Image (cartoon, rainbow, N blue to C red; front, side, top):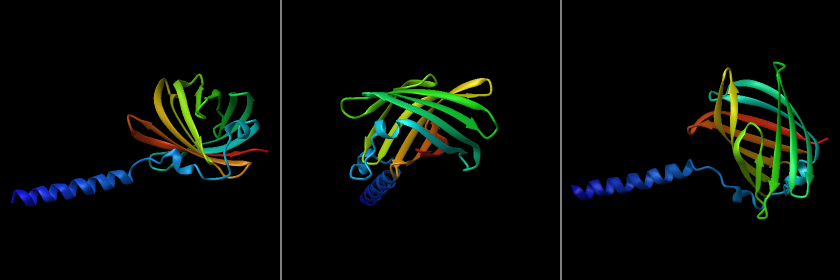
Length: 180
């Protein structure tokens, strides 16, 4: 009887491991051979426009917006000046200060970002993670963003970001960046 229980537990453990492995997040290294090659300093240089939506947990679009970006680099230091305009007429501004590290990774700060954002490029993809101080009514919530950007061609890059709090998915942001 004990042997049967042990076999059942072994099978359940293996099945659980396989199922959990299927839920694992993607790794940036999977994009190493993809092209076109993304160089953030090249793509985010000059004027860039973006068009996006925020969807809540149910998939309902709750915000639509455009972003005008003015981007400059001096060596390995970049500034991305983002001006958001929402469908309801409200506006927001975020200025990212980015640094390309010696190992090719990126770090960044912005006034509404808690601590330092970190990211890495591989092939045509960029993964960027940070904690945003998100104002809602009279409160400010610290929410985590996991951004994935994919260079489609020299003019278009797509961005999908998952927003979480305490590991619970709150929603997703989808953006299309377009260079003139």
